[in-house]
Length: 173
Image (cartoon, rainbow, N blue to C red; front, top):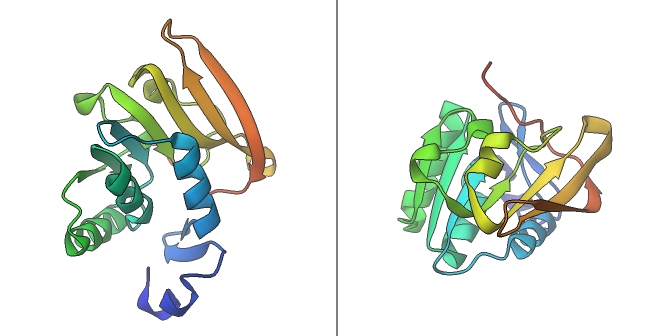
């Protein structure tokens, strides 16, 4: 995070990181990670790299993290942060996260750190059967932290857990 905000890093509140984006509060990062349930052998798709905080957490718990960030400057800073931490199991791509990262699919799990009104179809398509997606879902005034489980037959079950407020998932038209 920006150095002038470092003294606030352990407060349980989102903090600005530039470009109208925030880093999530520690409670939400922990909750989303717990709900995702990453395993050491699994590949994870993350949408919304930000400065790399969530990606670093996921890299400690999973086999490989593929992260997509739409803001080039944030992606560059995230790469530097992750390199400094020695996180070699994270790859970052600049682009529209709603499209996922098809070249490395299928993924065991996906985590979106920006809110979508509807689950992006490309993300669901890139998740393996028996996979899971955790994301904030819904319009700005009614977002829910949501878990989507994909069954062996490709059918999904959706659980809305708590009300949240995230930045919107930016897409390229």
